[in-house]
Image (cartoon, rainbow, N blue to C red; front, side):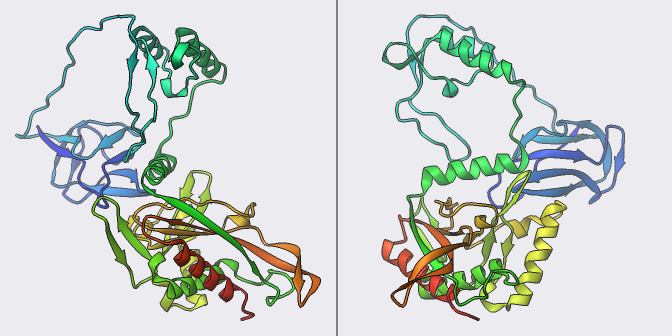
Length: 374
């Protein structure tokens, strides 16, 4: 049997979730004909057949997570044979406490500072009851997890029904956030932009595109925030072109389509491009390359709610600008109280490579641009 394995889908992706098969065992397929669709990096990707042949076996089902290099399809004909692995051994029950040095989460991993302490018997009970020990609050002496602790969590979980498996977009989000939390030395600076020079209300104003323009002004004042940083090698890449990832909230999770070369495009072109990307995201037809390679990120969360935040910087980028809800506020104008419309801003940056002064100057330039009337 000739086996086709999950190919490298680019951007360092190590796995994909099967969305749907376009063939079934017994079907004949031509080279380059759609074979299956997978979801990865927040986009659905169609994988074509690498050659013509008759499908003998599907190694995964819709909803399965398949790792890079794992078998996908077996075709009739000569080729590599299947090899089923077997785990051999015996489980020994003891009374001594086992300490885990670290707990890995996501692609990059998060290290627990103290680890988890439980006897092998308690660990076996947790596996039997499908309880993750990281969810358990220990009550035993010296922080040891007891059987009662595990049973308490199992009861709570049972009362609330079966858990949802985090897949697709939310799974990618969980991995990216875990990686960001473990790698980035995040710091956040906050300030307000006085929008009094705008119209009486923000109605009729394209706030998101104004934010994009202001972000460009910030990058021109401090190019250090439009960069990629390689944490392992210590290399920083200052990037000339500004490709802005625009955070978009959907029921499926967080999407970040990329608006390209924003420093060289006018407002109408930017709005048309953003509308097209949003439509593609909603229809889940956005191309994978349009979800990759941003150089800086914008989150206009104030369209929903919230004033200030500490947005998450996702490597290799080094900065994300967040805009809160525009509100009316009493300010000092020419020495007297006045009611102006104010936009709260939050800039999170990777303090490993961006200084506080660079971040503050970037934010100052953003505010100056937003406070212009035009």
